[in-house]
Image 1 (cartoon, rainbow, N blue to C red):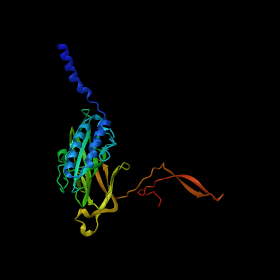
Image 2: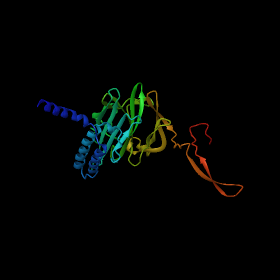
Image 3: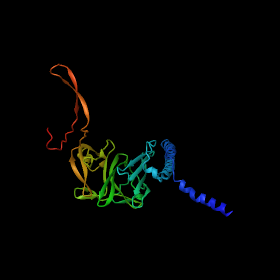
Image 4: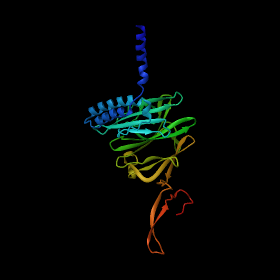
Length: 311
């Protein structure tokens, strides 16, 4: 009888070792069903309830190591944003309530190289409607709520930081673009760091409140390694105190990273660069034959900031 007893005990203890494998395709289908149910919800009570169901299931799936790289292509209204070094992933989505206020949900997966493990952290939106976004360093339990769409790794000393670009619905008449920083102390997540140098001031995060009548461009350019964005101005001088009336004025500002800080540069030139290897065809007249001939030419981008560029 003892031999049978120990055999059964061995099987029960060993089983969890095999349960670590996960079929991500099946899990994605479950999440897709919950997401569809959420998007079809007709009132706030249904939206809140179904969002909690999706959040619970998402939290379970994201604990597996495969979740760091699995594409989740069927979850089209959820953002999966990866850092270029593949060390962190932000998963976030929003739910619009009947009064247009937003429910934001976000999870962060990050790699702990020292302990050789992954950590999953939920960013908990505890903000109130119309409340200002905090200016200091905050924990994951005191998140302001936003949708992030870009992660930019930077280094300050020996520590890795991740600059993140985001958007917030904010108020019925104004919206917000956000530049923030996320970093980690072990498994703990922090947002905000004094690495944004704006003239004589240094900020933990940069906020751009502007009118809902228009959109503001905020993007990262890998070459020449800068964050470029629309400069905002009031629609008229008398509205300078009201950020909900600020709109892009066709000029651009930017942040460049140098010596551990993002430094603000105003009135920069924004350009669309073409790949020098691109080619196109033109038609020219052959003077000898009098016929049009098709000729392949290379496209060459001229930098307007370069003093050697011809007029």
